Length: 115
View 1 (cartoon, one colour):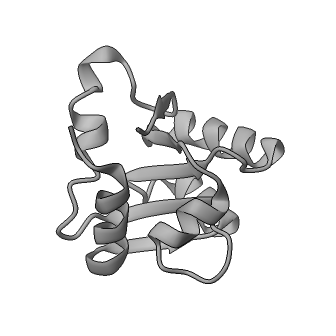
View 2 (tube, rainbow, N blue to C red):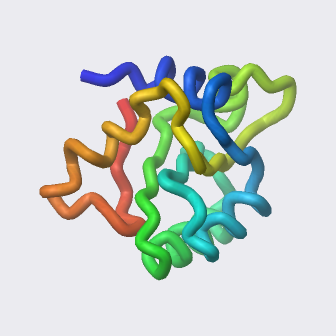
């Protein structure tokens, strides 16, 4: 099983990742993201918007099983991170979260709980 925390940390260090709700919504609208990750305590209205645009743009969405503080710690940031979008994974295997579950219909904005 893929270590989600390590995959996120590696993606932030070696890939192209946008942090924050506004940039995540923009990337979901335009379909520029390869994967979007939301913290469990992301505000409901923002989460609903991101999920809606992910479905429209066919961008996979993962709900991180941790708070925005936990997600910020994995990104090595001193501020909370409720949402992030991965444009390029770099050396990370974070996209395997969706690749292995693609046949189960967990694609296009449906939720996949990260472990």
